[in-house]
Image (cartoon, rainbow, N blue to C red; front, side):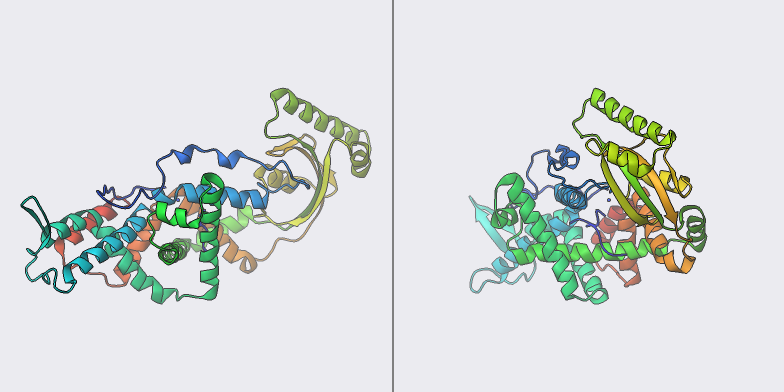
Length: 394
């Protein structure tokens, strides 16, 4: 039940956001290129030394997740990022207004902030514009920090994870834009690394609360049904893989599938799995996976096949995954675990399904958090703005 995500558990979620346009703000949070269309997730390393059946190579998956989270930083957390920019601008405003011997102390809001060619900009006018643009995002950042800092105190583990996320952003930015950390911070509207880490820390805490909230929605009935239908004892398998490169042509794919069928025919004729493995060793990859659970990080086609097979039996037709065509041999299976031993895992799985089905749950969770904490508005305009904002997610 840990945070994912994501900057991200996080992979961990797209949703509607509060639209805001800002004149004279810092450089745009994320560069204008349509980086969402970059197909970085489809790249595979050409240097894989050992073939595995994981949905994606763990390292490649992490890099893909990091890129996805990086490219969605602005869209996923526009509200939060605007809040940080707003905080900076608001600080500038306060400094201007209270700087000794320069500006009055906002006695009635009509004090001038700036003047040009006879036109005066008052503190009220500037505040009202900032309030219109930034009010909700800035306010929610402050409120959520107050609530979440108490609920999830800062720990070494939290800070290490946040620093790792930050370093991942820096590395990706350098890789794709050939610019360093300083450039990343400047281009994304952060005046310092500390400010960026504060942003990530707030996002970390919000995501953690939202995950716990969604887990609380999981019912005992859902848990029991999942246990009955999805959970089974760990299964030990080995497999022969006829690899298919991601850039393979249709003809090459057909050749690989036919080779897998040829290997199966040799098994049907009575040869052992080890014998065909030796015979085709120059054309295949072999691996014994060991015991894998019902929720193992394997492609669904492999999981389904290994569950369907009997002990000491093999696939009667090639099993296709993103890596190619497999002939799976099931060796053994353990007894089904007791419900109490896997209940937490089941709750996590069901919560992830709920979040995937309804991305609004993230915002609904935070709204409940604020209500439970006793949030009350003294400013009726801001209250109306907040209610309008939340109506987008209900």
